[in-house]
Length: 229
Image (cartoon, rainbow, N blue to C red; front, top):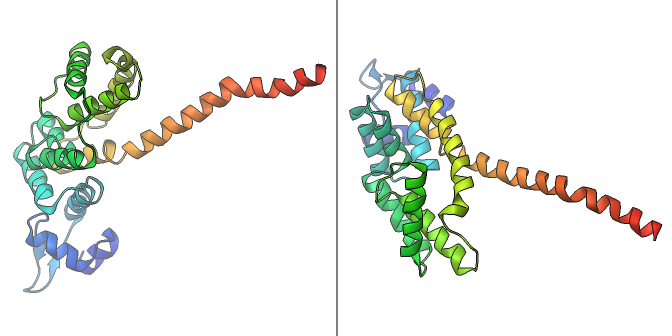
């Protein structure tokens, strides 16, 4: 397809496509003439990945280029590729940590909470990097819960961690049989980052449904008891 059709089908403007090519995020199209270039489905998939990293993940152009380039350097290492795509890598992790630091000051007791997180990881058998942004975020959340008077430690998190383990297994199952590094990275973004809002919505729906199941019967029987009285 020519760049005009590529733009129409992708929903990305021609100037933006050209900018991504200049920045090394997209491979140039196949030259047909000096000013006409042809793009294919591989360009489309790569553009979707770039847009997800920048638009959904919130990476800078430079960080997104780092991820895309390194995905191909580690095309045979799924674990490394996931770390790159999910943000536990170089500038990506630094950007996230800086953003977290700006949005909330560290709570007192974060060090104790970090020890609880380490205990949870050991209990679950999860091998996680010391500088993982998610590790720090969980410790901060745990510390905040405690400051509000909640009894929160690694034991209270265990049932949730077990649910998360099953969710992670489903995520990784979705990468089976995918050999192409670009398709694998794209699917990792779709199955994790872009699915997170849906998972949160499902939890809210489940809470409402469970509350209705537990408490609606009691509400319905209340008028009957008042009438009998």
